[in-house]
Image (tube, rainbow, N blue to C red):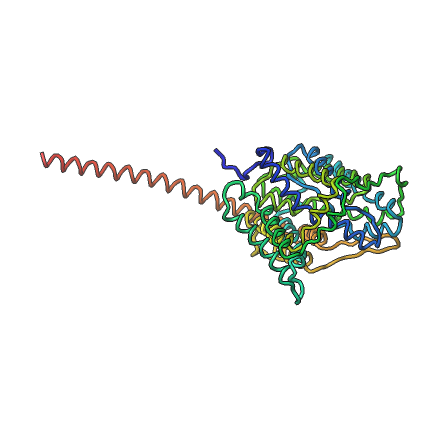
Length: 475
């Protein structure tokens, strides 16, 4: 019988009590980043462009749409995309909320068009375009690129540090790590939830939490949805500012799904397929645009939760999405969760982000990428330096403003380098040699085993003869 790779596989449904707790863990994992996008956009634009409740509701709705489109085969949670923060703020200055909504809907349509193209021409090109030497560094950059966020949250990014911040972050981190490595039973699969609760309690004791927003908030509050053709007319003036970013986030989509594929032991780019994952992501983003929410994207935080807790149940993620929709209407609860201090999230994120990077390293090891080959060194080193060094390429022409940076820039460079400098003939020969070596070693092992059996049989015969002789002599 084949051993299970996950505690709860993609199609399994944990008992309802456990499912609720596990869903809350996923909710907390994505909460900080999802609500941060509206905050950063509003700060950059100098006005309220997006709201937290709408971001939560569209995140939940988008995840449910994605689950439906992928036939419940992919344990992915969709949250607010950081890639669109600057483009959305710029679009708001150019054309207001109507320009923002129009642009985000256009991004969703671009995803849908790409999904249709992939459906028509097939998926075999994926492996050629994205071999392990490109995918491995891509995944590592996703995790390590998020590292500065965690360092800022735990207060170690400057020379002056607040001991309370560091203490809360340390307790959140150490509790999460201990539960993950030492706990047994159900607690072993909810380390992040336990770590967040522990850090929050310590932060309360140290007086680091302001409960005034909770007291001021209403129990039930309708999110400020912004509906096209009702609250505004479509405005295409800022379309060129937002829409091109979709081509950049496609790389993030593929990278996250490849990382998750490696974790759960199933290639999601082939089953349910990249066409279906893009369809789900595209529809989710389009619906988010029609409700006044930010563009959606796959979340590395939840990928880490799946990998580290071994809980890949799509039903659990679906339940987390339902909870996100509900709390979007619960003013008190949204305000309460919003009071979780940065040090608590930062302490937990040290493990979350690091796990993503380690998973990229595992891709390289598992596929036995040969770093004696200088071509592979050039590809991986270029990607890592560009992705982590803050490199950015900006295209500005009139109202057009597209910036390719971080993982997106590194992915594009990695793909191009792999196509132009990797000697395909040498790779094929190397693969054939490795295959031949494996076959020879396998034959050697089989022959050795056969000889060992024959020798044992001959030895037993000789022992039996000697025994019979001695027995006869005694008689």
